[in-house]
Image (tube, rainbow, N blue to C red; front, side):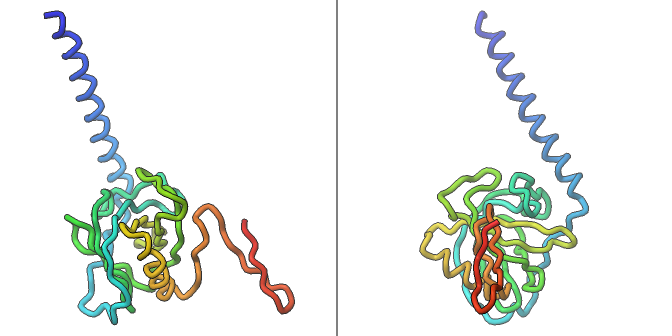
Length: 186
């Protein structure tokens, strides 16, 4: 009988925590109701550049790696298959409809070490910066085999059209000084 009270209190606290998490998630989804769904995959994605298995970690508001996008199938971590093609990127997240990121919506690719829910070795995450409607977002991906990461980053850079591989915590600026170029970390 003396174990009933602590058990009831423990179960009550756990239920309150679960209810709080559910209400917080629903509130986040309501706040992000204006964020549209990603594009559906068009019939012609162009010539395939690269396809690989990845871990989809999260999509966050750009520059805010702790502010997860909770709508449109982008809210949960899962295995994913990604195809980089001439016209854009197909992101196939397990259990979600395929999403398409048109090449015109891509803003950059870089490497990162952390985001919400995940901390890895230095540069272990690949960050795709892209426009989701009017919202600039960052999608964090992780290759199960780190040896495939450089090829993936190079394929995305080909779509973006520029070298944007600076770490997420630094911004590289190329200064043109006479006949020489100099990189400056900010």
